[in-house]
Image (tube, rainbow, N blue to C red; front, side):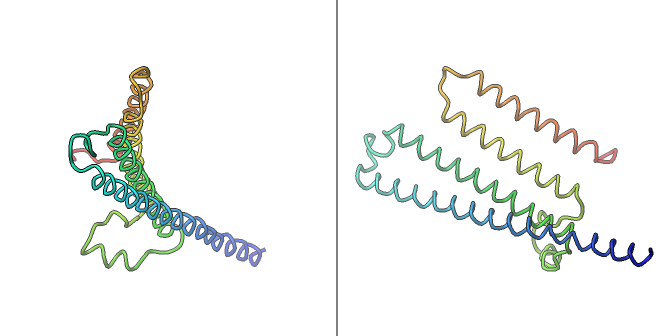
Length: 183
């Protein structure tokens, strides 16, 4: 019975390596989003440059087209949204790896000279870092919806903003419940 228990515990412990699939998939997804957002920005740069040179900087040119301006703002907000989501996936993949597989030695060495945001010590660290970036994504999504909304639906924008406010408050109160007295 002792040998069976040892084999079972060994296999159970080694099963944590299945997390590597999520780490790799999240990392690939992050790279895809980084590349797509960067591609969108370069495409936008091409459109703005072409429009500027074809119309000039006159009032009738780039600055005179409200639709074009909205397209530029919308593309930039979309790129920021994609970058933030890619960041979530990157933090998630690094955090999963550190929590389930092994500490990342290079991250520990570089932490002396750079930000410690990617060092994940426990599940609460991962949750806190992800929650902050997800909140930023929600805020960017709110602005993206405001840009595309019409004034015949202001209540839906108010509901979206209220929902984001409630998420922010929930995160704030969750954080405050983990902070020791006096801080």
